Amino acid sequence: METKIVLIGAGNVATQLGIALTDAGYRVSQVYSRTKRSASLLAKKIKAAAITDLAKIDETAAVYIIAVKDDAIAEVAKKLRLEHGIVAHTSGSVSMDVLKKASKNYGVFYPLLTFTKDKKVDFKTVPICIEGSNKATSTTLQYFAKSISSNVQLINSDQRKVIHLAAVFACNFSNHMYAIADDILKKNKLSLDILKPLIEETALKIRDKSPAKVQTGPAVRGDKKTMEGHLKMLSGDKKLKEIYKLVSATISESK
Amino acid sequence: METKIVLIGAGNVATQLGIALTDAGYRVSQVYSRTKRSASLLAKKIKAAAITDLAKIDETAAVYIIAVKDDAIAEVAKKLRLEHGIVAHTSGSVSMDVLKKASKNYGVFYPLLTFTKDKKVDFKTVPICIEGSNKATSTTLQYFAKSISSNVQLINSDQRKVIHLAAVFACNFSNHMYAIADDILKKNKLSLDILKPLIEETALKIRDKSPAKVQTGPAVRGDKKTMEGHLKMLSGDKKLKEIYKLVSATISESK
Image (spheres, helix red, strand yellow):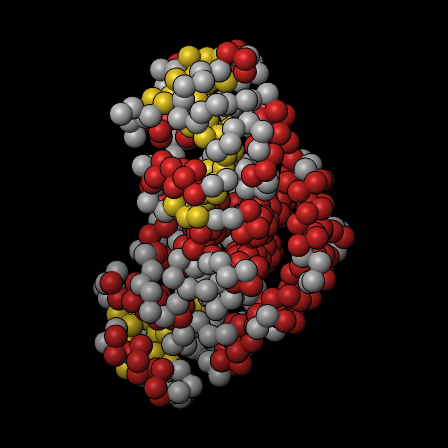
């Protein structure tokens, strides 16, 4: 039996999910977006109908995936009153309960990756965190997620919040560390390219080793001379100096 | 003509360099270490002689690579008085001039990667920063480096210091961000495994995009509600809270 899906949202996550689900043999019947242009752009790619009015939603779908910005989820959910089907959002930080009134079967389908519209994602190894308002819903959502990923996990709302906070450190903040390095190099007419192999190696190194155990650098060595030199080089930038001091201090404390 | 090399040091960098240079057809005649055990361990791998006394150094080698801890480089260099050959250290932060008295031809051979003894490194894409006390020395060191890597760059001491500082942010500090994430997850009985695909994607994403442009997360979105929630979750840890605030502030400022 063909499982019908409706995608609410046409951004990065919706686009990549839509493509992966279509590839896995599902039929996406509709793509909703506030603007005709983005709805059509994605709908065309996956042979779905584009809609810009939630009143016209296909009420016979099995799963409705809400992949819109975090602060728009509740607003969209308010406009849904579905008799059948499961409604799930894809957010790491929004509570499942904002979907309560959209359907009696609701849940979360949170893929742990960053997405861009134009880069096709191989979902096979992407962790997908599932939560359901009842057992049948979480079972169905898990089954559904397993058709695109081999890394599907039941994660409750509290755990999901912890994972999201950890992801801010591990991903958002480390990306900002790359950005700071990029700035420092650019100011000295050097390119970040020279650090890219090292950046990738650093990320790959923790595949099988705990990050605390493979920590390198002056802070973990207690190399005060080098750290003083670095702080001198950063003397023009108060914020960077503070970050350098603070992070070095927690590194040396966690030895 | 076979180029003879002496390795001073038997740690991670010396081990990986020794293997790569031997693979590239060079002959490492000696490996020096303070302890017989580590000297022999590496010497055996690359068919060299192990020495623990610098007075017994082979004075007919073309290149002497000092790959010991930063604060031991000057000390080792003091014991060397070479008539021939180039002496180079492998450090990112130590000045070239500590080698001044070891030979009239001295320089830096700084491979930009993190090394572990038991993981063989493919040097082909590893940036190697070269500096020489004179033109002939830097030319020879470049030629030498090019035999193992296709990414060899002439970098002077000031530039090298900038690169090293940038590497502390991009690599040491991002690894610490992984460690913080690991801690947060462990305290909640979750595993860092769930974030690893995202961590790797974050590092790979900047291959062709500037990190500032691909910054994601609550700080860059100005999502105050999520940030307040995160700070609440971190309320038991003053230092982590400070890092969260400070890094979020610089992210939102750099928008």
